[in-house]
Length: 244
Image 1 (cartoon, rainbow, N blue to C red):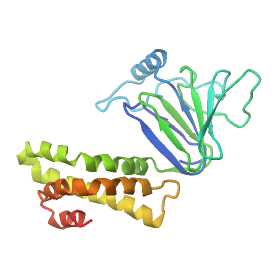
Image 2 (image 1 turned 90 degrees about the vertical axis):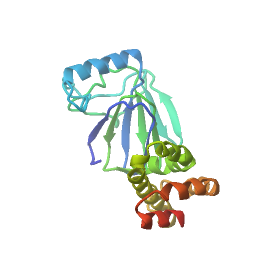
Image 3 (image 1 turned 180 degrees about the vertical axis):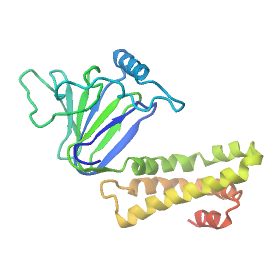
Image 4 (image 1 turned 120 degrees about the vertical axis):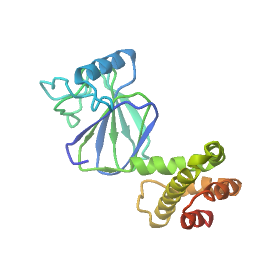
């Protein structure tokens, strides 16, 4: 994100993980309370929908007349020296001169009980399910949201291979295509994690623990892997992943 950019994230039904690699960000996270969800529903209705659903829950809302500031009762979470979140609740005599969020269009004034998370390089923001989020880049910043999520889910994907293979066995007509697509994705994802371990291209994320977990699962999962990728018509890719 470029400095000063504002990114509004629609609520999702699962946790989201964002590890910051460079720069600084501020994230306003709102709890999925009945009041907030009602405000969100009204904003969806005001913005309208298309075949893909609401494009942006901030559309159609009147902009604030002044800059958004942190109010009494709001919570601020700031990583300490160990990159662990320390939590502070604003008291009446507290002020934050350098934390202001200027949005062209936003719902933050309507939402209740917001939490401000100040994110620095190496710190990880975990957004709970159904929570609306507004992220502002205080400086130009880069995060590894997709990569971190990809790597952290690899052990579970390998562990559940037998279930996936059983499902495909019941849909024989599509076995080859599904097996081929799965083989490509699994090999490419494994390769990314292994390459990061050797090249340290993402120093803020240690793939060592993921690789250790994969190694513990590999012997038990290898038979499932061999049988699953054996159905792939792409024998070259199948041989690569089986040979790992």
